[in-house]
Image (cartoon, rainbow, N blue to C red; front, side, top):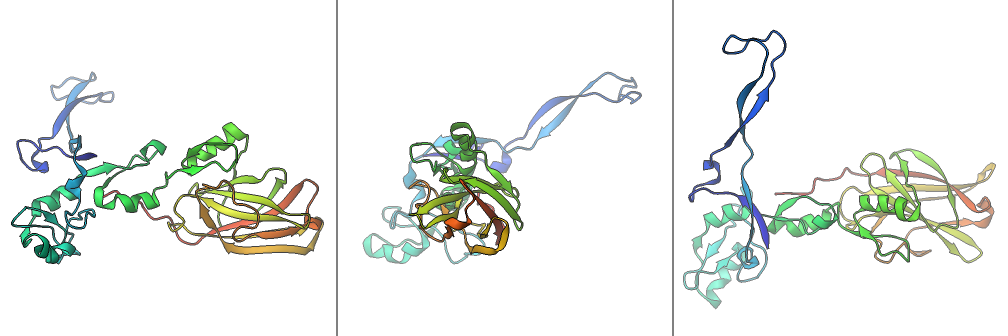
Length: 314
């Protein structure tokens, strides 16, 4: 496993590493006096680089695991003062606070606290597993699983049945345009938008202007009776913020008295099974009488229930 951490010099702590100084050219304005009394020209000024040096290393993953339960070791935080990492006396096993009490039954007492390991686990970070899909974050190992569940770059499939493309939701938008000539419609949350969609195309892309969330308007058929309309948010984690609700309505052309309306929460999907099949989840059944030739005229409103949370990087 490759990790990233602070570079230590001669066994010292990270804040003992001397900061680099670099030279940069400064061009004073016309009439500005130089230190030597001259005017104009340029000067070299030392600028302190406060970026902490870092290194990439490979390390056995066992270092990051409790040697009793084999779960990731988590360093003690100020809110968890009663939890700490310990080492047993006999075999020097490193165990988490949950396994410390019972470790004596299988090996030996684990009463030696490991403060140095706390510091290491809090500083060593691993690259997100979705880096190939665009994520540039490094996260502490014990928080990697939580990050993956909410990572905005988690891969999703193209909804086209014959297409094998997999990428982040943002990458899918470019793929839709380049490979399938499908341009996404941009909408703002909290407002109704009128869309005229081709019935011959099973899905249509919509993107939220505020946060670039990607949605699919999926069309299907219930035989000769009705056309189904459903809306999904394209992302791998349905529990992640933000959450959305929608209002979808279809009116009879030229007569607003005949109308069908759907108000529902928007489900999330990584599209592993391609575009949702007709009749799956919450959908709007639109009678054929409300269709306009080979198109369907929809009014769609998407509301954001809560803002997106920041994915943890520490």
